[in-house]
Length: 474
Image: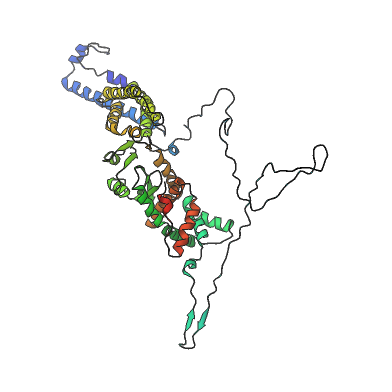
């Protein structure tokens, strides 16, 4: 017997219709204790039915209907890509798409080629002019520069003691700035493990190096970019607007959180043991600008202007629209349509009439579902809570309607965590914070991370301060 059939067997005596397999007189003759028990059973069955419907909806969730990442989607339930019924679309750039050809680099060698013979057989040409340059790129044979500092000692005839020469401080580590920067690039900017760096050095550079030596090099790289990390923090905390997000991290299998705060010109990463108000305060410090974030409760209490991520709301509405319950699906479909109309207003601002019509429809949606106790009511109340944060991007130029910028900035950290399973010490956490902040900030400034690392390590070896002026640009 179906759950609905069981519930139907327990009626309220005041119903005007009586579609049950017993008469109202039979119900009236049922002892009151049995009636009370059956009503309790009916209420429990109703709760169970709601719970089953909620759990089934949760099982159907994916990255398009919830906040879970695409990597968590089942590989057997990937949506099929829509293709025309005729010939499938060819891969690559389409007609009208601007090409991106290989740039001509400054040549190290130029070879001039002239035609040997005309198609008519003539071998003498009155005029030759260049018409095309064909570029060939090749690595030169890789040979490390190896310098042996031969230290001498001398006997002093006056005091009878030996005096020894000392290695210059800038060469004391045994690994130069470019080689140290390369290992920092491999391990940090690309998130490779120490053994992969070791294999690369042995295979490509023909340099045997121990894991311990690699770790010491990375420790020095982390120290060299500490001034950059401080400058990035200052730059981010003076920005007009910031995009903030967080993701789990593990320190020796203990849950921690990797936070990020991204502006137009810099990105600050921070490790913290908690996902809390205290962690958010440590990240933002004295910053007081426009916050773009998801709907996490800590963010909702931001005292300044806040733009909530519309992409999160759209995914929640899409999940509600996919529910089996027709009332929930109707609410989700309506909300999805209105939110999807709001996002394009970032690039195509609405007219006064369009905005008033959209605003009226949104309020009608909230008013219709606000008092319900199901998921439709929860979503309507969520929209009401976020009302003042839905359209900050329309009033403040440069603010985006979604938090995609912070989520993209965290993506590399998520992949690093999945490969390495986190870090093993606080020193490792500091390395991740600093190299990720430098990497993303370099990307925002269109700068090569390797060049910046070399420029950071070179003055560090000489006991000097690096050039940080580029961080404040833009």
